[in-house]
Amino acid sequence: MTKVITILGARPQFIKAAVVSHAFAAHGIQESILHTGQHFDANMSDVFFEELGIPKPDFHLGIGGGSHGQNTGRMVEAIEKVLLEQRPDWVLVYGDTDSTLAGALAAVKLHIPVAHVEAGLRSFNRRMPEEINRVLTDHAVSLLFAPTQRAVAHLANEGIVGASVINVGDVMFDVALHYGERAKNLSSVLERLDLEPKAYTLATIHRAENTDDPARLDAILSGFAAFGKTIVLPLHPRTRARLSGFGLQFPSNVRLIDPVGYLDMVSLEQNANLIATDSGGVQKEAFFHRIPCVTLRDETEWTELVEARWNHLVSPDTAEHVASAMLASLGSKGSEIQPYGTGDASSLIVRSLIESPLL
Figure (cartoon, helix red, strand yellow):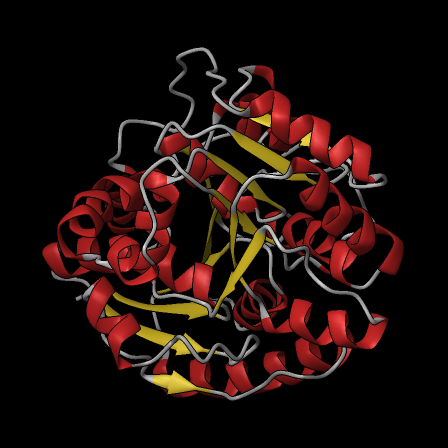
């Protein structure tokens, strides 16, 4: 039996891994989940795993809270111990966190084949730790599962070509299809919050480039105020801490709520009239649900959504830029595109691992 260890470090990675874990089970693959603990998330409770229908991690390293270098180094050492004990046939990593790079480094140094889900994404901003993580991971692993043809092209530009690169589509599209209907049937978040469908904008702000810069954070808050319409914002702990430290407050049209579970978040996305975010995953989820999106960043990895006008990229350097982009995006529609596959990325990933000549 093929034995896989999946290395995860943050809540979004667990969500992506959920559909692949279901595919592993359907194909009789023995999967063990290792959680580095990179991002402590109070919402990753029993309910979180029950909603996704996945088992809790088999290994929990509890590593987090330090600098990028500290975390990565400690993770490599701890992951290596688990890999030496378990001796899997494959190690699977996702995305671009410190956990992604640490898992890849630990495995390749033990000559264990590594596969990278979401390979080939590039922001071309080397100041982002995530960009360094994804580039180094792609150049270390054995199999690269790209989510789009553009990601394949990025890899080719860096000399990574051939049978090791497979365009499987985006696992987040699988997730949207699998859990979208479940959210419609099971989530009662709109009733609990007394929200009317399409009568609010959903916002998320958590990225360090926004929360750690008082000028940018103030521009976002002032832009929300100038937007003037109801905004629902699940408040990330990082953002809450920075607000207090900078002496900033959210305007009166922003309704702050505690972070919500995954199905509730999907329901909030599905029923919003607009989404404003600095999250990479939420950009795509907005597209999957056909909700216009404003991305409050200087660049995005998902450029095809900007080109198709589903996503409107705006640097949050002034309140005017933020407010005007949000007002212009209300009610907008992009062109119909299908860049993320057909919703079977998880099955393609599992079959590729099983059939790989590296086994």
